[in-house]
Length: 245
Image (cartoon, rainbow, N blue to C red; front, top):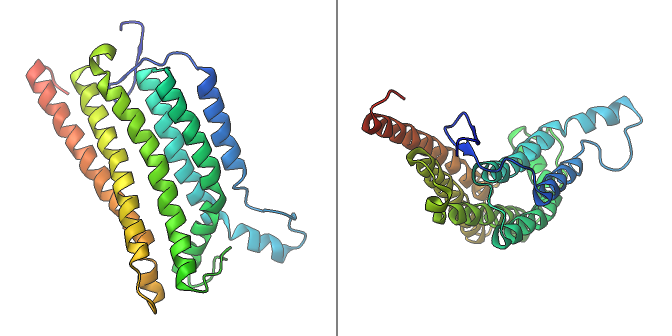
């Protein structure tokens, strides 16, 4: 393993070459981002139209950031483990399939969110007329998040099962476990959001109608806890091996 590059997080890069599949995945994510351009359709021809288009920047930025989370997840998985077998290839292709579907309602969802929290200052690209619309609105987002999270969870579990073959160090095993729990949390929180969405009562207020989306803020708590746990495990491993972390 001496010929592999050490990452900042203490992981050695086993994926030292870019495969055709990684190139395909990167291109698919780039295409998904290109579908999030600020102005869809006609180019603004007046200052008023330009102002309205620019108000969509927050929705674009949030959508872009979320897509990058999943791209970064797959990129880190590829760099850390360098696994290139049929199982991981099939999962990666499925991830591409899901992200290209996921991007379709993504900006619509975030534009509605920013319109809600800004009191209508930011424009919404969707009109929710009935409770059924609300359920479809949040339900599609939850299903997409659960699907993409499941792919990355399965990829990480596939790597964890090959820990001995890959000769993962103790800290690499800890980081792998944290990644596995992180993606599992994405799936579980997405399922919880879908459940809340399905249980919304008729006549619910606009604030409570946003509950399925607010559920996802639980992931911030999970990520903080996992970061804390990894730091504690680093100290433990450093103490056991007799060096300062």
